[in-house]
Image (cartoon, rainbow, N blue to C red):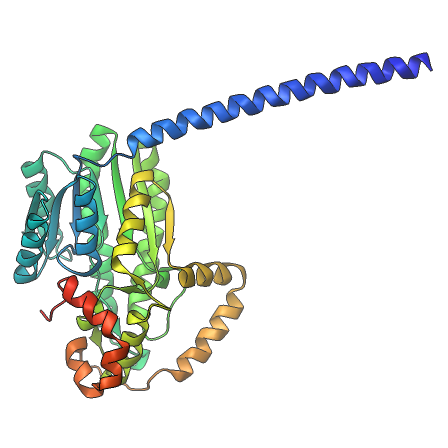
Length: 355
């Protein structure tokens, strides 16, 4: 009994010591986390930083520019269309933003290098790069040509690579900087009738994730943004092939419905918050989150479902391209206008008037 009592006492003392050690370790851990959180809160301030946003003249790019300006950032925006770019510059200037607008085709590396040099000279540096510029071309594979894949890759992959490689040297030298890559749920799971777009977005996701791993040692934060459908009004400037009218019909309804698409303003707020905190990834919208997670766990289910969806989508092999506002004339009706009213409002608000 005495030996048993002694053993129990020793075990109790040992257990108590372990408990104290565990509590001490936990407190030390929480203290470290709290200090890290405090540093992150200080680092999360964006006021006074210089943000370069590609494709910043309309749609999500313009919504992002407004949101970064609201956080006190100085802005540089670029786009190919000079008229739209000037309207965006005036919009931002009236909101009190310090903004530089530079015409630039991001598919041309020389123009991108010149853009980064001009912005760096004007503001002294670039703290935040947002690779946002994109192009949507909708239609079945039968209507696509090699040029469609090249166009998508040049805009949504190479454009981001060019801009990133141009800003990395100065960020490495300062050992600070943020790079935000706007990809798509189409970069997690390939969507029917958006095959060139999805291919480019898959490449952009891979680039962004690998870049984060390699740039962290230089003090550079890289955030991958994965939006689902957004009400930006971009369907008015999207390009359609195949059966132009019917392709526009399903795409515009999906992009305008509050059940499937989030507002550009909400998306911009979420993206800027993710940028502030240096999050590795942010998937936007409930449907996109569900789709990404189900596909990751059960790809056979989602791919089978998408094959069934594809059977319901329009057929057509016409390689000709029509802008959304042109294709809309083929299916225009009072009902369609009512169902896409939120999309039209977004287009008016975000400078998505026909170029």
